[in-house]
Each structure stands twice: as structure tokens, then as C-alpha cells.
Amino acid sequence: MAAERHIPGIRFSDAARQVLRDALADGRSGLLRLRIDERFEHELLFGSGTEEDIAVETDGISLWLDPASARRADGLAIDYVQELRGAGFTFDNPNQPGHAQRIALKRDCTATLIPRGEPLRLARGEWVVVTQSLGGSFTIRTASGQLARIAAGEADALGLSMPQASAQPASGTLNVQQVLDVLRTVYDPEIPVNVVDLGLIYQCQVQPLEGGGQRVAIRMSMTAPGCGMGEVLKEEARAKVQALPGVSQVEIELVWEPPWDQSRMSEAARLQLGLL
Image: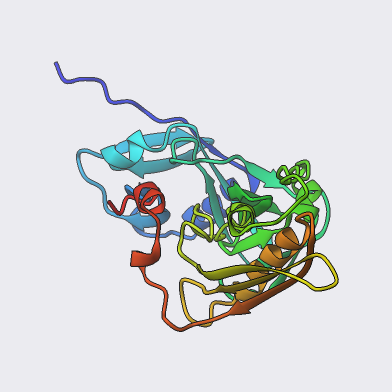
């Protein structure tokens, strides 16, 4: 006897259900299919089926999936959102590695588009997914698919608490290692690795000033020339180093020579990114 095939549970929001019903009423040819690939990219389309397909009946809508997609679809919630920047389906899939629940913004806030570095105004009630929360900032994906960075000071817009500052070293003579330790709390918004282990810090110097205090000079780069996030990460690094006891001046220069490459990454970073 053939094994019974598992029928995944899939939910539609009212908006998604109405859009799909309208599309089906327009006489679209083919079956309404949902494809979920190994990267958990979701696609709704009309097309022909196969004998192996699994049909899911939800709220009067028939949805057809191949067996691999069906295994990835249990618990999936499908919504349809309309924003000034566009409209489209969104997929909240609890089976996706690193899955994070969608969050409706609690207030208007300003984010920074990745990788262009341009400001992005987000409105209260917009749905976002937090894809990374490291070093005090948050990387989010909007309902329209844009990737953006929300600074720690805007954490309450996500309904989250502002991350606590890292413990500061005791006052006294500052050294390069203490500066690098602080820079390890500055993360690339697209890669879950800090700027030190990524190899973006080309030079770090600590010098005493005649009138007292310390001057910190840093030369850093980005993973791609002209990256729009360069000034954002530079300012975050400057603010965190400036907060160290005894620091009076911080000078950070963005440099592009020599060009960054993966050989500059630490072994820990390469291991984390699966490059070993």
C-alpha cells in the first residue's frame, strides 16, 4: 500500500484570498501552483500539474504543490500587502532556516536601505521581518522585499528594547586590543560577521595626546568598492570607539586600496560562512 502523503497546512489572509479568487475568476489557464525551492524562495504561478502533485484546499482555493514544496509548506501563512512602494504576496514560513516572525511596526521610523545607504521611511503598521540582530542594530526585510537597517535607537518601533551597551573596559591606558574588541560589535548588515573578523579593519592606532586623553586612528574598508553602507558603519564604529574611557579623538578613514578579498577574513569568519 502506498504511503499516505502529508497535506501541509497553509493559511491565506483575507487580502491574499481575495486577490487569488479574483485571479481564478478571470479564467487564468492552468492550476494555481506554489513552488518553494531549497533556498525557501516562494513563487505562486499558474501552470500544469503532475501525478505526484499534492492538492491543498483552503477557503475554497485549490493550491497545487510538488512533493518537495509540500514538505516545506506546513504552517505557511500567505498575505498580500499594498504599500506606496508596490504590492505583492508575502510568505511567512516557519520551516525556513533562521525563520523570524513578522513584526508590524509600532510607529513610523527611518531605516537605511541596504546596500545603497539611502534613508527609507517606514510607516506604522507596515510588516517587516528581522533577518539579523547583531551589535545593537537590526537588519529587516520589508513586505516589498527591500533590505534595510534599523539603528538601535529605533528598536521600540519594532516593539523591542534598545540593546544594552557592551561592557566598557576599566579606565586607564587604552590599547589597540580594547579598540578592536569594541569594533567586534559592529556588524556588516548583510553578513552575520563583525568588521574585525571580516578583515575590514586595515589599521588601528592608539596615541596619547599632549593635553591628556587618547587619539584613535582607524583605516577601514568595505567588502565592495563604493558600498553605500560605508558611511553608516563608519559612524557606528566612530560612536562606539568614542564611548571608550579616555578617548578624546576618533579619526576613521574609508579606504579602497588594497581591495578587500576573502583572504582577509579570520578563520572563525570563514568557518561561520561555510568557506572552510
